[in-house]
Length: 146
Image 1 (cartoon, rainbow, N blue to C red):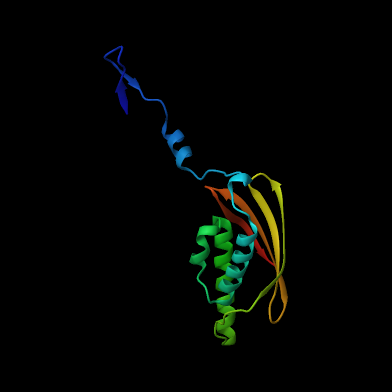
Image 2: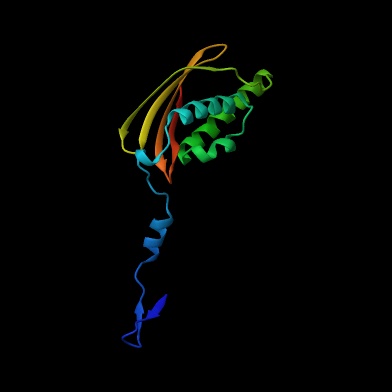
């Protein structure tokens, strides 16, 4: 866009490029002090992931809290779980899990790494998550079910 300056009648280029605009609208890092406590998200996201793998929740319902890599990994894992249930002829059933413990630490500002240990009817599992602050909220950028 070209504007005219008041001193002269000739056009002057406007400050700011397309790169500046793209960076302004790109996801922005958020510091820990501007984010809510991570414990509720660690617990709720863990239960949500286990429900996805059990086949009673859609992966898309968790998309808001997952980064792209974690989302794709969860889709892959849920497809494998669905295939295994289908091969055994088992219908999806809502899992009953009890959270035993939650541990987390902050290796950097706006980053939380946590582990949630969950007891199910058959076995105890651990879910490791890395949360990063983006656009004023936590997002899981890494997710591992052990």
